[in-house]
Length: 473
Image (cartoon, rainbow, N blue to C red):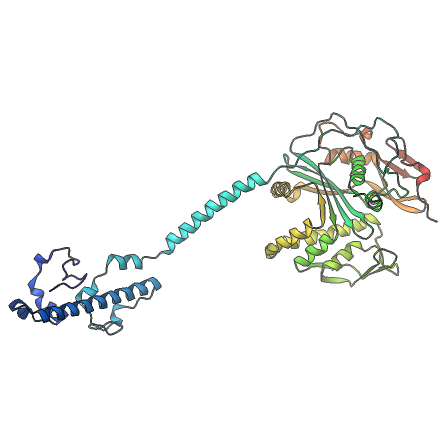
């Protein structure tokens, strides 16, 4: 007959580690209590029926012990422990008979009771480190420096190029660009008439950590072969003639800067409306009632926004940017286009600051889609990621916003123009927007201005002639 108490201290393979030959017979009474057997009768005789009964009784007890062990393991895994005093000294939680060996804790139970969260936490941390390392390596491959435009400064060798288009292409000199410096042009395109009403040129010096941006008013006089010679006309004119509008606009910008920009982005103003809606609106204080109806525009324009602090949705945000004057003339921009540009900058600043709030992190996908779906650019997503990385290294003091030196009182043919102050512009151009190792001069730009009845022409001609201007009234 099998005479051992499982994994307890009385078993053949008990906790003491001794073999059955070292059995202490002083515990015979306890043994008998555990198993309910008469030791003397067993020694006196051997009966087959008793043998089978004892085997059955042993198997029953063995399975009962295994069930108790499994229950304890489950409690340990769930963290359900009860103090020993909660148990009856002779019976467990479920009323089973207790044995002396039940007080022995096996290695399996010890392992089950050990907290597993430190190892799991460490495994999760190491997994994140590996993933982050892989993502960073992939990002370094994906994020790429933009290409710089080849060529140097404009060199107008022909004093009056053939007037076959809305702009003239200038040959380029051998000036060298500084490394780590990029130039760009950003235009906000209004679908109402396809006019680029917002125009910004800039230079990003990643070596010295400087970002300079200059606004060009939409009514600024430019030297193009059109009857309305404003900076917001070349793009629209080419679109209306079946073109894409990009090349004539970039040529016009090249005439003003004296070189071709490295990067450009033409953004539909509707992108701003979609971004505003994606972040749930922009809180802004409208200075006065904006009531302006322009039924002659295509499509007709109707703006009605009450004064005061409010949350602007996408439509009203864009309408506030478009607003020029009240129907009754009570409110308008006294400073003309320059004052309107300042107001637009306030709106865009409010949009940017609120879009970058932590609560809008989940809206980044929608904002990104709104921009990419409404933008024409030569900048890849990888280029944009690299530029953003460089931009985040800048401080507020490293970024400047300015407007081209001008006079607002220009008038030609009964139409108002913003007249650039060319000499002052050249100083600003060389101080903030010159990516070359030589100075930009009048020889490199193609600009005209009409102030106090006197024409200034850097290349000695007006595209299309002075009579090409449209006259109103």
